[in-house]
Amino acid sequence: GENVEQHPSTLSVQEGDSAVIKCTYSDSASNYFPWYKQELGKGPQLIIDIRSNVGEKKDQRIAVTLNKTAKHFSLHITETQPEDSAVYFCAAVIQGGKLIFGQGTELSVKP
Amino acid sequence: GAVVSQHPSRVICKSGTSVKIECRSLDFQATTMFWYRQFPKQSLMLMATSNEGSKATYEQGVEKDKFLINHASLTLSTLTVTSAHPEDSSFYICSARLARRSGNTIYFGEGSWLTVV
Image (cartoon, rainbow over all chains, first blue to last red; front, side, top):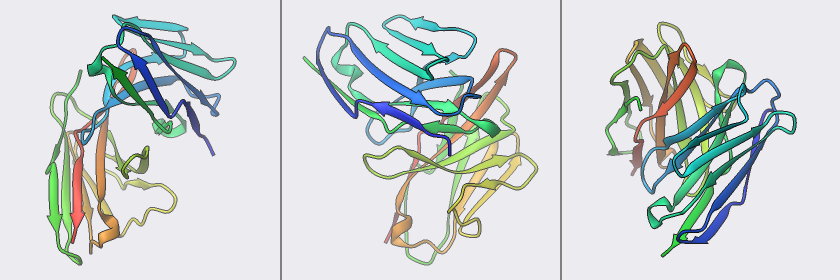
């Protein structure tokens, strides 16, 4: 079936450094790729998303890139801050409008 | 962003009882809502798709008689865990799809912690 692979599972960076999380998806018909930030004990919060008609989208310190040919998409966080520490999930919409999630990346930003 | 509210945020129930979790889209209408389950340190697993005015669509392996879903209005979907057992203890999260001309966006609720004792 359709799936989304996410790497790395854990990522530790120093405050101010950049963090990159990568995902691949299997359903070539997917056209919407959101990224969620989940803090402990809370629901996922949408932080940025990209649709298949663009290759890159940026919102302040966060950017997402999409390569439809390779079925890759990535999240880039620049100038990381301790409050960026959380679990990040990529996702892709598959047939029927359902969201399939990656395995998650636990990001730790050390002050 | 759009707001999705879940209630209760935490609930403890006894084995054999049923518990209902509500999911509301506060500032938009959602013809489609989704219910997920999440175990500690794991990803979100889709349980079912809730469609307003029709029966929910369940993912493979999810018991529809155990996890009853009702989507009676464009802003409310409910998940009822029937005859709960300790293994049903989990974090349940709903999401709602906001349809825009530019495309759909999916927002999540804050989740509901269920503990069955």
